[in-house]
Length: 94
Picture 1 (tube, rainbow, N blue to C red):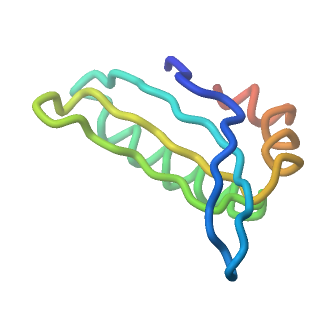
Picture 2 (cartoon, one colour):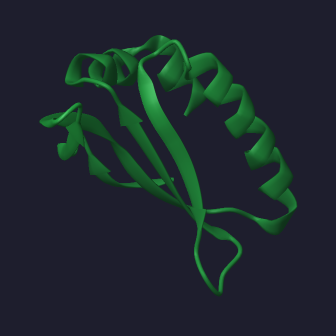
Picture 3 (cartoon, rainbow, N blue to C red):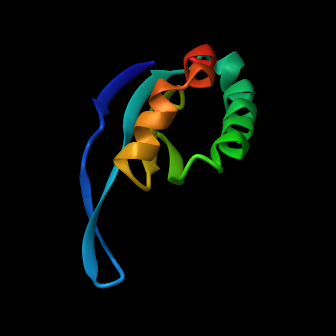
């Protein structure tokens, strides 16, 4: 997995005021035989991280190449992002 951007500040409108979110954008190429495993792993990780103040997680597929994916994860705060990034479980997972 190649991480393109890390700890990117994203201004968003929320409740009439601008707030910031933090997250990661990563690109990866998945072997065709591993696509189902990626989907399954993503479901498990999403369930585990729902308590980690994740605002959203999306996996995008590139047009024209079904093996290329981009993963975007957005946290509700810088603190939530850093807590996840520094956790032992996150390092073991990746």
